[in-house]
Image 1 (tube, rainbow, N blue to C red):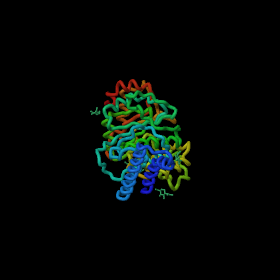
Image 2: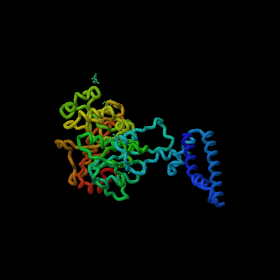
Image 3: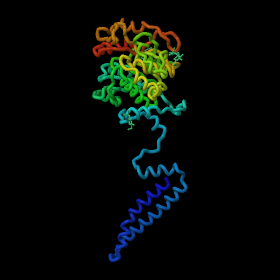
Image 4: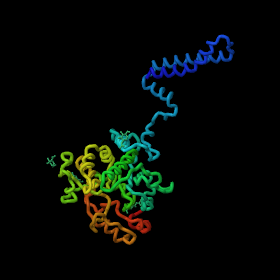
Length: 390
Ligand SMILES: *[C@@H]1O[C@H](CO)[C@@H](O)[C@H](O)[C@H]1NC(C)=O
Ligand SMILES: *[C@@H]1O[C@H](CO)[C@@H](O)[C@H](O)[C@H]1NC(C)=O
Ligand SMILES: *[C@@H]1O[C@H](CO)[C@@H](O)[C@H](O)[C@H]1NC(C)=O
Ligand SMILES: *[C@@H]1O[C@H](CO)[C@@H](O)[C@H](O)[C@H]1NC(C)=O
């Protein structure tokens, strides 16, 4: 490093000396006094500079030399980093890291648990969609006034061009995306991509996966309190006998995943930062699921529930926060439209279940619900204060 700095300074000064050499080789031409003065001045400056550079490289420590070199070759480089520059979220969500690079970057974690600044933990709402977000006006109403407590990420088809106005909280929140197919590993890849992008903001503490057909069922303060005060993350995870549960297990996954460890659960999760990093950095379970869980094994229903149940069972509530109605039967849950949005409908959701919250029984089991058709929006907006308290 010392060598480099010296060679660098001499190199550039020698170039400056070149005309001097050529001119002295031509004795017949008289030297104008001005030029001579100028050359002497240059020489003087050169000597002072080489002395300075020898002096400084000898007496300054290595770490002080490094910025000198940097400032010599990269005059546009940023100022010395202060804490603020490490904790400020990225100013734009666009980047050109591929998944390997992004996941590696997102897996950086601090190992000192106390933050040396006031950190307000945020909920990252991650929307996994094909294109438009028809329920966005309802979400805007839900989020209003809580700007410091959440962030938004959207993964849509790469071909989709969003048209949110600049005033919208959804404006500019699209992450670099790829095609994701239901039931395939590309779907889990999209979810990991959402998690990884959201992890880049150090204030994001909880990560909620949502679809374009999801709606919030409570006001923001209740949602924030419920999630932030929970001892467990809300990942649906259960052991189901029969063809749609254990029947999808493949012996080839053993011994990494054993049949008694095989889990099923809804894709729509809420997890904390630790589990999000575990998912993004996973290289143990991923290859097994990619190779041995293909339709009719729907990998998005098994990969995260199984993996997290093996690694961190004590951190899971084993239930989802997103209400869904499978009672009509078939391969897809019920979709609700305009005609369904009545008071009795929401009473059914709010009073229909009992569950555990921090090991205590409660009837408040769901914070979100799906699936809602775009034509349900107007009714939902109109009655949101009566139904949901916002
Ligand atoms: C990302 O780029 C790196 C470096 O070019 C490469 O090694 C890696 O395989 C790429 N990953 C993906 C998922 O394309
Ligand atoms: C599978 O899990 C069960 C229960 O956890 C355990 O008894 C058994 O030894 C495991 N088998 C293998 C092959 O790891
Ligand atoms: C969730 O299930 C795991 C087993 O997979 C269990 O160890 C854990 O205690 C359960 N969580 C709660 C809150 O009951
Ligand atoms: C949220 O809802 C609860 C219960 O419905 C209510 O007590 C509270 O005042 C509401 N909070 C806000 C900020 O509207």
